[in-house]
Length: 182
Image (cartoon, helix red, strand yellow):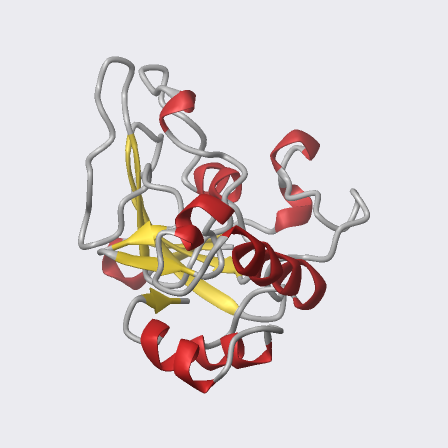
């Protein structure tokens, strides 16, 4: 992980250097990683953290990894204001609220507190069954199959991956294409 600082300087923080309680533990828990550790994503971390800024993180990074890269929570931070276990997306802006602050409903179209919703679109990589159930032609059973596919195959790399989910044919996919994102 690296911080992109002013003047182009870059401070590297490797996941192995993080305290054990701040590292992502997907593999250790026996689950498949949600993203690929080989890919790199950029996340803008701001709010109640020690060093707000733009960070390069591994593709399987979670909110807790971004906060650790930003030097940890500020003493005024409200850790309950963000889902520390949520998987991050490339280009995301993560706002950590202070105690008493309400997390903003949207920052550059990317709400932190709204589950799988980002800018009005359902994010296939963070959505819950309830989020997916809001989509046309998706009921609880099909929503669960989408989550099961995500667990079995890792993150959706494109919206087209939906075609691989059992029960999503061309007509259903055409109705979803403009309502979802990765």
